[in-house]
Image (cartoon, helix red, strand yellow):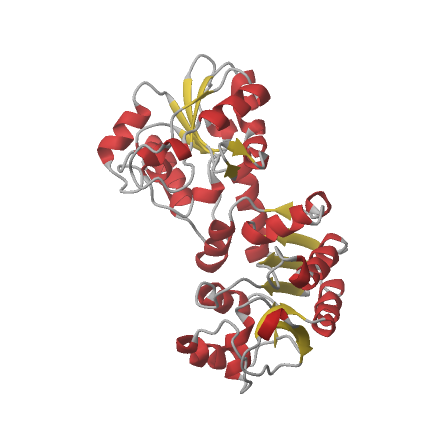
Length: 370
């Protein structure tokens, strides 16, 4: 169970107070234009609540990876302009990562952030797994709380850990199994079934004794995958693969692929099996695409899973990142019970049961009480 965090109603009366709000406005951009403003809109309930309560609100966020120095490619200018359209009256600082003190969690940078502020709100779940200055520093200096988005994320992800409906199914995909070994081990103690697709499935298939041609393989993780398979838990792997070979040929194989062929999607048989798993589950967690869905030739598996999740009668949570991008691509975002705003944060919360940003909010509350 994820321990509760202070929420907006736990703050001192914000009327006439200056409030610093850590948001996650790390939006996708192309040539200085915002491609998707969903992360900005996700913060609006918190920002409007504070404004309606009479607060003077200043938001702060990172954008991209500017490496601790100002970089015009990562200026908050376009975000500031969109924010002003959506919720006039909220100020927005420049990119936090323009200062090396942000990622270094420098106390001096924290002091500069909170100078002149009366209260702090963290609504950036997507950054809550980072022990960065703007995430973990302010709660030690100001009365602090989680914003609406952060509180909802904690409630939903915590519910998966605490009391999920059964059967509980996890669908995991993406490129590397090494990125998700910890969460797989944690989930195996909680879920009834894990289905594995994407590039990470090939290391599992090798652990079963199959050849995977030129597919993505982490040879140093084969033994770890074999140990997971031997643990007696239910892990469902693809039974057919769509692969690209010499000259751009596309063919469907079983679990073994010849040299020169690279698996890039689950096959239709596997998609049908995964859909059956979704249809019988009461709780579904999906994190990671089933293949290279950005290329329409290899999008069928991810689309099939996305449609099954969107049409499920169970409670379905999509763990942000590429899975959320896939839902958006297929026009299914609004058909899912909950889409997390933090792919990495949601996985870490599932694995560890807590995040640095949440710990800081709780410790700040205790410090204020003391």
